[in-house]
Length: 178
Image (cartoon, rainbow, N blue to C red; front, side, top):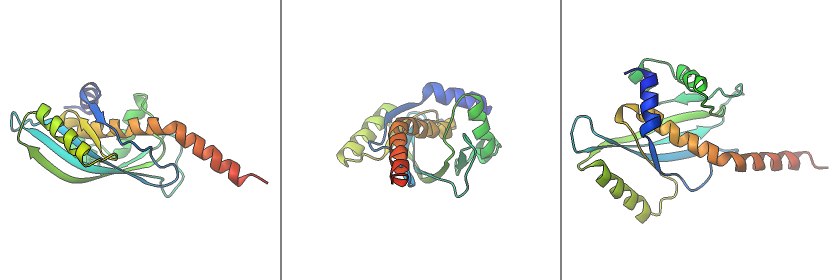
């Protein structure tokens, strides 16, 4: 399947069931843990469970606006395109990520023996019982998991933008006060 078809599929079918409660850090790196669930294409009636983290940090060099760096999302392996090409692909579709480094770190890929609806209930309950306010819960198409995870990250960036702007202005004022 072509990358644009997978993007459209992810855009239509991704559900962000749970977002981290805290905003992203303005001046420091933020680790965004997630649980991604999808109907298994190999084992009908089971659910693919992908757990991972996305580390969002400022790059070591100053980048032009809207030049995000995506690392570890396996775009080259799955879609045979560079991660820079994905940034351009998103930009051409009006998706603007800030010029930060988004580094994906997968920790596990498992199978939940049960329907997607059962898996959703199970993981929502598990996160609630653990009082986990940092882990996102995402449902989407198995073959487009990268885009579903990027939609989660994008939602967090948008939600954090107002607070980021306020903190940046406050920091600027502190530096420039007599």
